[in-house]
Length: 348
Image 1: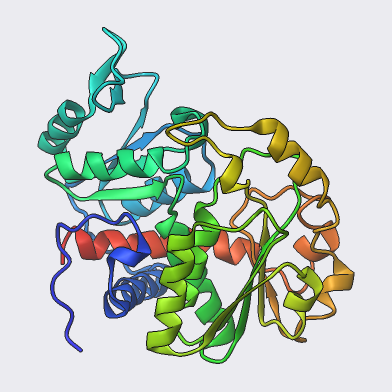
Image 2: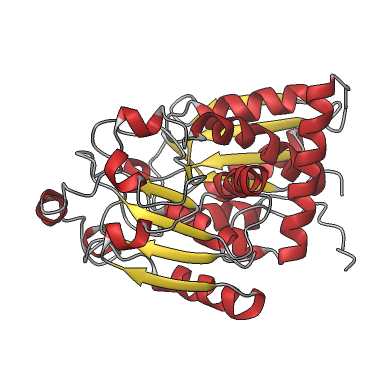
């Protein structure tokens, strides 16, 4: 099937694209990764400036974007929101401290060819969906593509890297059992965007997706529905369970990661309930990925994590550094997958 040009389109959520469009961007990333390994220069972003605006600290996201943009001949302009007049939604402005979001989006659109944003957590007082709303508003105001480097609902760049890694290791996702699991961490301040985007990509390619979580850690029903709609259209299956061991049996991919309870995050009509989060977390400290539970998976299964991971809580060192782990390949693929996305939406 021929895919129409994606030039100029925002990259905010996996669900904004068709399966064919996802494949097109992924294939571009794979091709660029091969050319990079062969030492073949490419200047896809020659003389183009991409703004990287961060509301949250980063290791992989910032460096994978800056390095990838450099490799493709472009210039990455790093912005921290405490070094500029912080972009603010209407009604959230503070005199001489913030600037209306639409004004910032329009000005940056005049200076460069794309704007990448990472916003979540404390920046929006942990009000679930507020960062995603900000991302959409910024994209609506900008006249150049906006790339979501992670908000509180979606992390599409991580999803693309996860998909690339799974295909490299497994060949195909069709018929494979892919487990997205909650895991314990003493930190309650983690977004739900990674499991959302992992469900979105894995459900497109015929996998048997299993979502495992203790009661109270269910994800956004809209994201669950999207995954179920995908498997109904493309094959595979989608199931939920509150039994981690049962989920890991015969798994080909396991992705155990911590996230907070959406129910007790902040919402427009109430503040985040950290005491309720603490109680729920403390009741599920046994949700850890260790050697014992990995023995339930298939012999050639892979362990994935977006990083940073909380060692000795989410996962043991024996698993993180063991033969099933692909975490560093996964981290490297952030750059290659993002290069593919940028090459398509900025050039077509």
